[in-house]
Length: 441
Ligand code: GDP
Ligand code: MG
Image (cartoon, rainbow, N blue to C red; front, top):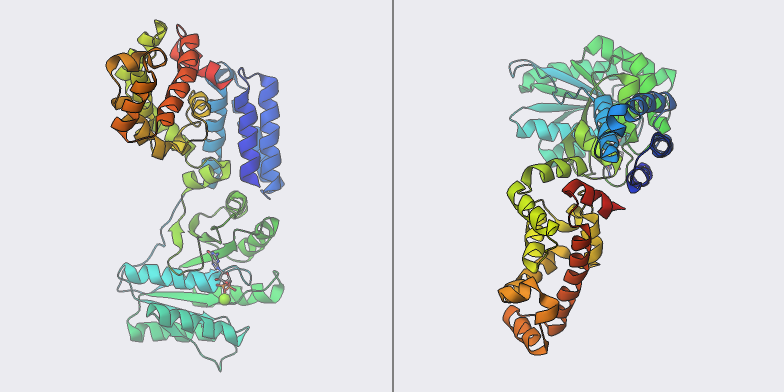
């Protein structure tokens, strides 16, 4: 999967203490491979790699303090750029007019479901939508839209006797005015594969009913197929946007990049489930994060820079230089990290903290944090400064009782602290950045 590939690519980039042009190119090769594996189309990958490589091996990046972080940033930004500019608007006319939205796409891509999702969203925002069953390919398609309409309390127009979808759409527009509907959503037919008859039919609807917006519904789970069909639809119709469906589960984000690239139109929404409320506005930055497989690492890094208490960092810096590291420092470092969010996620992501995460082993940090703090708070100042020497068996029992834990947990904390303290004092005297570098190696 793209995510796994990229994650390992960045590990390669990151794992090296010093990033050279050669190993930078190794890492980028992996990125390229991952994008191709995720069905991002070849020309897109090529363009992407050319842009990123040029910047990544540039002097500015290689000489920066943290080149691998910079490369991750570059790749992320480039992905965001390729999926933008974002425009989530449906460009609705005023409520006194009728806006016509046309859905098209392959069979099974999610057109009918998406009609319902849009209808629901519009209804919630105070609009009065009318959904139109213009898929006359299969009788079941009409029923399906009626079922959705009933679920949502939204009017559905259909004409089972009619053979021509253009006539159905035109009748529906008249009906919309009678009903006082202000948005009409056309649910058109699809095929398993693009063919001339289907395209001809859609073109006729497009020309004769003049929808204000024509959206291509694309199944985000289908890789290269999605790209090829998007190209065909885009050539036949004047698309105004794309809706990527089935982005729940392990859909590859790759489709977002390619489809945007071949159509040039904005991705409006993503479908994230079969339920009719599973529709989200498309965000290029979130999708880039998803493609990178790092969740919201960028946000975390930025947050880290903002929220770490600078004074506290400096104070600890000074103490470590003197080779001092106490349980109070330990606790304070943990508290700093805790500000950033779920610990398991945060630790190991922040440069320099991966060492601490390893030292902490498999504990569930959220849970154990409270216990750790409880234990530390039950110690005397002396014990916090030098727990290994001062805490004997009876003190251990006292501390355990005071903090409501088992005596062996006090022991474990002291051991963990020992590992940390050794590491910290070894690193003493180094600057913060240097130390973070060492911890990552
Ligand atoms: P159409 O042939 O293009 O009209 O496609 P449908 O709307 O009938 O959807 C085909 C299948 O995809 C149905 O089983 C839907 O429930 C499912 N589906 C549609 N959108 C999504 C989505 O965003 N996520 C998931 N998991 N399933 C979806
Ligand atoms: Mg359908």
